[in-house]
Image (tube, rainbow, N blue to C red; front, side):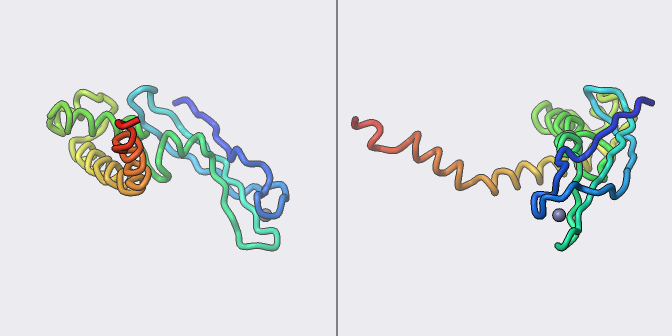
Length: 143
Ligand SMILES: [Zn+2]
């Protein structure tokens, strides 16, 4: 299986400016829809130079997969899309994805996707509300 290496993109501590020190390397098997399975090797860095210990992980890796998760975000998205938009069953989806994912894992992942969508909406409700006000501001139509 191919191994891809990831490391913290930040090299210097944003708090004290010191060069980050090696903490540990974590390897895990990652399954994805768009890429075949691969081993993600992540070099995690740290700093505790006169302040509380801080850990620095790879932003690139966390943008494609949640920490400690085995499936990339595209599996989550694809599962949710097929289940809620296309109306497929979890067992059909497991077969369609063909990455060795079980029906139960599809159910868990798509449930998780729903929670995440709700949270994103909640966190951005002010932004959405302000954008809507801007678009639908009454005085906009009277100019
Ligand atoms: Zn530091």
